[in-house]
Length: 221
Image (tube, rainbow, N blue to C red; front, side, top):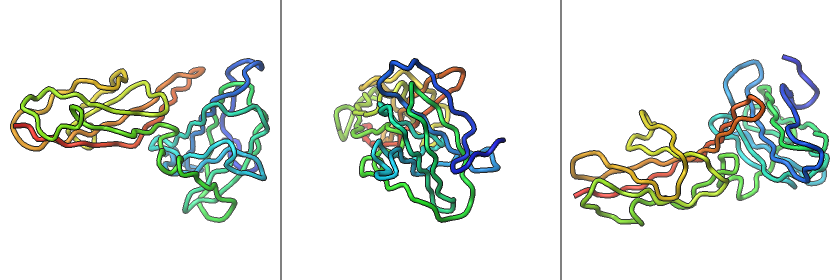
């Protein structure tokens, strides 16, 4: 692994032509010296004068943070998390979509990334579920077949739903705003867990951004 000054950049590449006026930037964070991704890292894109000028976000469970429509300008990347040394690195003006993989050393100190209110609420790299209810918010149902009504930001590509909080056995499905779902047999309170993701392949790299998990309950009679 080759270390550069400031943030440790393992992979940085341009994917589109110089004519693109704005770009999407995917940042993936690992612990230095290890293979596990770091969740909850505050990542800011900005300038020395305004660290979060172009956006701020928390990395998700896969260590990813995504920034959409980043302007073509020299960008200062700031990453910080409790228990790790906060660091900064300057990026040349993006000429297209980029993926940045970096690692952070254990420790403390350094310039902190100040999260915006939006970044605090939407920690899934821009993916946020602002509303999730079953069957238009019904409290009771007499049928096992319900709809999972949701309102999501951040252009998800897939969703998953389960009566188990760990989503065991639940596969990813093409995203839709009101997918059908069949509750388990037997009367009683049913709680459904719901999550969306944005999944894409860029130049052979699989990029996955996960939203926070939402849940709703309904009583089956």
